[in-house]
Image (cartoon, rainbow, N blue to C red):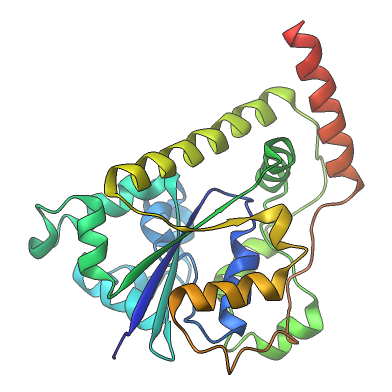
Length: 268
């Protein structure tokens, strides 16, 4: 397996990272996904590790890394997505590999992923990001697709079995506005963005920056600019098979309005 260039999509939950992964899948620039999620699940959702789709990932760190590299590579390009709130879990596992044990994080990832580039995706409107995350936590619906398109390409796009597992457990029943929950996850998003910025500064990294609100209005242009950043030929890029669909609706609008009003009152 020859990897000419690699990239890590850095972000926080509900920042548009799945949409960006889809764009890069369709552009032929690797197969980015949240491949380190199983280490995170071991700490936060051990029941998820009992499923058939998780079993192949229950391997020692060296073999796990080989699976990540194999799964995320297409056309000589490797991609992976990492959320900051389990970055430390990733490092704990990678430091179990003797060759990486003494390496600081940025040096370790540069050794692990050839010709490494960083992409940082963030969301300007942290209230709506927090509302989206609060709703996803309550409903357990993390992603949604146009069913026909998804069925056509599920064999070669996305981690279908993992998505199906969580989608089957999703329910919109009993959703309830909760100021404290939204405020908590909003702070979590702010902390993750700040942590990524500190990481980039300390390691002297200047990532390619994607802002969700700009990206949704310039989907193809953003993907093509990213290919240029990665020095990947855009000749095979095609975006007609987009499968993801927007999850936000009137309920998100209502919760965002209520939260902003409540927040303003509490600030006095």
